[in-house]
Length: 405
Image 1 (tube, rainbow, N blue to C red):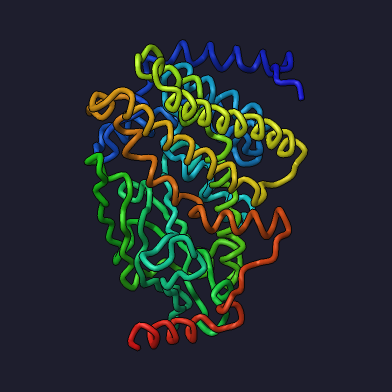
Image 2 (image 1 turned 60 degrees about the vertical axis):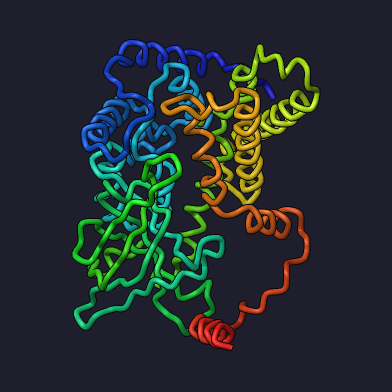
């Protein structure tokens, strides 16, 4: 594989770098208070500017407002944003996950209604998937949707760990529409207006003091008729898998865009006398560097596959696991070497160290992803599944009986 930019890519990189240099003074800080309405509006405005220059939704087809470039060009933009010290679009969830889901599963009317405002930052989206009893096992969601006599759908349930719900215009919600089917069936994906009656958003305060995540309560929320269904009624699991695959790809390929590079981590401990004296610390840093370099070069290979039109597969889950675990280890090493100074707020590493553990669950927890890779990539036999041919309502009843016993 040739790791150098082609002449066309080098020209594109120079154009992106030049535009960012000219406009970086207009950009808000990459990190800010996501509960501050002024900061949110500044990030929206910046996404609008980026979209006008076609620097968000880089791989989106031209028919949906994007430039129709390849994943390599998206990587170039991500690298140049980091180098310029400016943020990308505020709606990472929408641009990277919800937008592709709408393109794959949406009706022509849904694509026309939702994609352009999403791309421009006018309408932010959130992902209403996880629940208190359905995190790693997403198919166990208990949020219910029932159709009323007038044909409209009503949703009742609770979602949790929802990023951007506090200022999102729409949410993509996975809900159960048929409890007489096994748990992976009978699910439907809905578009939920976040300002609808019955929607309550509550921030979840993290150890850093911020509330980046939310819990969302849906109390008999009327979302509308089938025009609010994404995909087919009963086909929600397929739509959810589309989102999850793109989420794992985004995390797995976004190593450097997130700042998780071996060079940056090495720079944080460079010059420390402890690093000079203690071979164990140097070995830990070497392990982190090896893992992240492996992800980097596997990512380059994945980019070639995407360029050939192959869709994200379950193997991206392993890149996600490796990236997050290596970044957590690096944060621990930095705190160990630099002491309490590494935890001072605001600081370069305090947020990193407090935020990373929560990312372990994004896109699927590690045991679930390892099982998926083992079964679907390595061809290993699946674990015994006692819930495969049981209706979801029967499964819930048995669980309640077991708890009561």
